[in-house]
Length: 330
Image 1 (cartoon, one colour):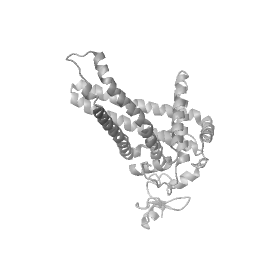
Image 2: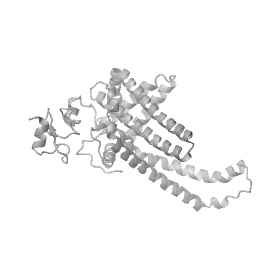
Image 3: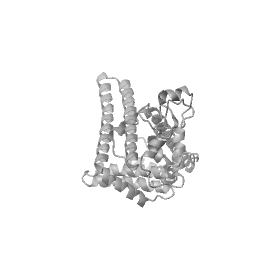
Image 4: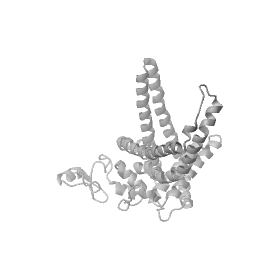
């Protein structure tokens, strides 16, 4: 009797997913596994043993610093920079190909001479473009995780996240909602502030005002809104920094957690580390900008190194699953 038959015959549940029926056993630890754990029967080991099979990441949230993170990622980058750059090129190619969907949809709408059809097709193409680009981005992070665990670059892993389309869409919708709600509240407060100061009542424009008159009339309002936006930017960015870890969290596990669980884990990983996350994000951006400045020659390897830093930071910050208990936001 095979492992798969044995798992089903015993009526056992998966060790990692108790709500799922076991379809086999792990060849290393012997735990029952479901189809998700065995990657539909293609892997003889459970996710935990697959992770342990690679070299453990040398940093954790208690010991990591940017200097140590840079040292680890730089060593890996020196070893794998060529293949990592190829992975980035493939990612950019996939993103460009997805962008063509929008152009094709726009062209079809124009050919049909229907504004409504053009709008619908453009929206569908935009969603498809964002989905494809996002899933390949998850694949690029998965490649970075592999090499940081001591493996080699496998460019096929760029497309290993396509089965997460639904969790990715749901998670991104939740992220957009979390970002938009504070912005809407701030906009409403700004409007109330303008109304309360009486700035609107002071606007008096003639029948045919000049551009200068319009600017002079709106300048106080724009000044108040700009000042309020600048004051609110720092605390808002600080509050939302854990969202920077959402994509790595989605990419790490073979089976994507629920959107709420992804956000919970992201907030738990970011606990007490927000300034460090901001620093790594800024450094990653500077590395990519530096690549552009070198006649764009270094932008591809620069993007590869930036992705390594982000993936390495996530591996250092990710809390053990039984300890990641902080709810968001916090």
